[in-house]
Image (cartoon, rainbow, N blue to C red; front, side):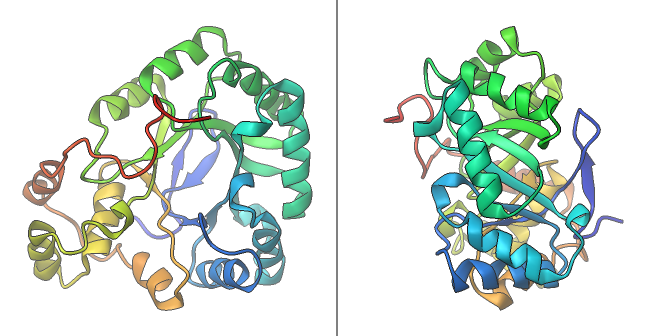
Length: 275
């Protein structure tokens, strides 16, 4: 039986929880410290931050105060666009590690595919991995053509690709490609930034299971083999989001949710992003 601390084995053998807390736009200070502590208290073991979010110090503080041994947690952070390139990435990583107050990071991601830079950035990630400062390295917001370009020269293959993914943007082609390449797909904005919370199809499925639409969406992720990191700053919502292991969506319900796809982005388009 799956549970909140269930993991997927990445292609390099590292175990990554299927479910975690995202802290994008969560304010540094009490807001992020409380969110992370509530999540860990509720049984979450994966926390996803980034240099861009400017809350790595608070995440680190919450980890320390949680009382949970470091090795039981899975911490992700990312190198921002303005820090890309080989030397700049190594420096950015040291800064992130220092802010987090950790000896290592479980997963380090290239935040966006900055043209002309992401290959040098990737070489820096390979070095960090080789030096044991990072257990796993991956990318975020990479399309198939970015991945093909990266894989042509990479010594270490990315083990994760974190992208905007929800039923309105189900990214089936990218998911299939990543599966073939042994790259785990991870969803950011899994709740479509709240835009599906009044969808009648989802409401009918939720009612049938006595669950919320958010819980149905997150269950769809897990059953689709997608790592998911919903964000919330409310304790009851953090607890509720994770309460998805006592029901299962039928094949028909999964198809109904799959059929909602409109290839519709709410975040930036990786091919037309002002880096």
